[in-house]
Length: 364
Image 1 (cartoon, rainbow, N blue to C red):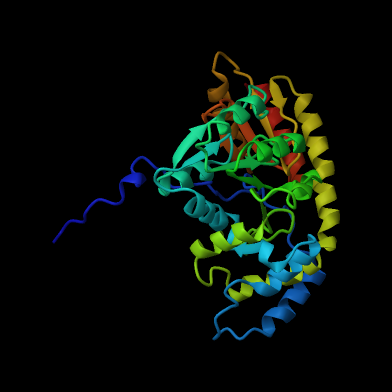
Image 2: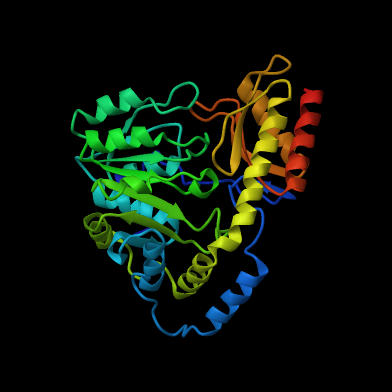
């Protein structure tokens, strides 16, 4: 035969996730750490890797890393699940709590992968949009889950791409209002200094998702983890891919987690630069930054020269890239029209962003 039958129907209309990585002098588009792991930690990584038997399969559940994470959070091993980045775990959540006849509550604008995973697993997506200022519409969310047909919800805190944390009081009210699994995506919590962990003991329907990719500078390694009650972890383990976290990643993760205090100066520097960049953007005519608790700043551009805000922001993205600065383009995205998102980089990279944006505004 010279043809192939159609793929699964739920793939129709889905667009592959594409963060549009492009070469640039200042890579400020992917919310990565602007600096690599500290040299002393890298030496420990080298020593750990030298001891690996690469002809052997890795620990299927990464139990050594689970134990370290559990101890640091006052939990048991059975309350931790490690995955191939947060992305694998997000898909596992959709597999375990979604599916045909089930529903996922989404709070857009937010990370697009949540809804994509739901659609891939045949899960109905129910949207409760955020307010004009990107706050969660708390009463609307609580009213929607009260109908009893939602199986899981993801509350991103800080929210990507808008930047603000979800109020802890709201998360607690949500947990009390529903038996749906409430996943709090805390991929950027180290930059916020806030977590929903204190709610975990009392709420069986809470799961916290975290990553090594951001604050711990391991975006290239792919490590994420979930903190939850034992029953939730047990269900997720049923759909998790065997050996999904390789031995190299496990070894690097253990070293980095044991040395996580060494990353605090870099985290503090990012937080300080975030404040400086936000203030500089706010001082520019035609630019409106949104408050951020994460390692980026989302900002909206006003229409210039008779162009719409979306067209102006798209032109700004092109101009910045031509100047060697790559930011994330949300100029035409739902509820984000006219917006760009800039990861907080080194002070030099941030200066390059601000100077190039100033030049664009003067020319526009």
